Amino acid sequence: MDKIDIKGLSLSELESELEKLGQEPYRARQISRWLYISGVKHFDEMTDTPSSLRALLKSKFHLTHLTALDLRRSLLDGTTKYLFKLEDGNTIETVFLPEKDRATICLSSQVGCKFGCVFCASAPFGFVRNLTTSEIAEEVLSVKRESRGAVITNLVFMGIGEPFDNYDNVMKAVRLFNSKDGFNIGARKITISTCGVIPGIKRLKEEKIQVELSISLHSPDDKVRSKLVPVNKKYPLGELMAACRDYTAATNRVITFEYVLLKGMNSSREDALGLIKLLRGLKSKVNVICYNRIMAGDYEAPSNPEVNAFIDTLKKGGVNVTRRKSKGEDIDAGCGQLRISRL
Image (cartoon, rainbow, N blue to C red):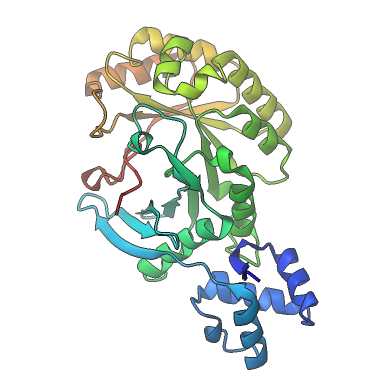
């Protein structure tokens, strides 16, 4: 019989599995502390549990692990990009972003991606598979180990993959991150970013957890957005914005719209005016970020005066807008630069 992936279990599921093995339910919290606070890699490290329980755990459960193959640390801002090998040999990239008042991990949710956004380095490699809940959790644990126990304050699902295309595993990981018996990270410190998968937005609306929602927008024009973000052909702007308005009405939460500026594509005054119109009356904010060049792309970032003019137009139109600095650009860890690697 295959062993159970213990990091893929919620606390209640772990309690249930332990009860089946004749163990007291309180052992689940004890084990969770070892797994997610201490970050043990072997059951034998759970030293305050009886040796008989450790032997039982080894016989019934599996501890998923990632192997760090490489890391690159930015000389500009200390951002670190990790290349991790999964147990089946596939690879993902995960980014650690240390700052003065916070420490953020940018998480991948899939091996590859099927959505083909033109400015994303993962797009040419296609989709391989979803990450499991335990693999997502292990990204955080692995970064904590590699960064010598850094206190993680924020998590963003902005790495490789579309989180809402792996909804169940991502949300199970989110609840584990938020749980006081897990990672104990505040829900508002966790951000899920989607390219605009409407069914995921509708499902998140019904969740009783106050995570942040971020949407990759990139154009107020359907034709242009369909070129940049092909999922727009399936979920066009009219339907997407209706789903966003339903979401904010139901949750009273602000949606962040990510907007990558590409010269000659979406950075004109007319684009800014279109964005103002599109977002009018919606509880939202906009993060503007300049395009990061990737090997597969023929696009360019606009000049600083063009960027400033675009932002000024948005501000005059009442849009809450911030220019976001992409971190780790010197190590290809910036927005859109992550990819899967072929070993």
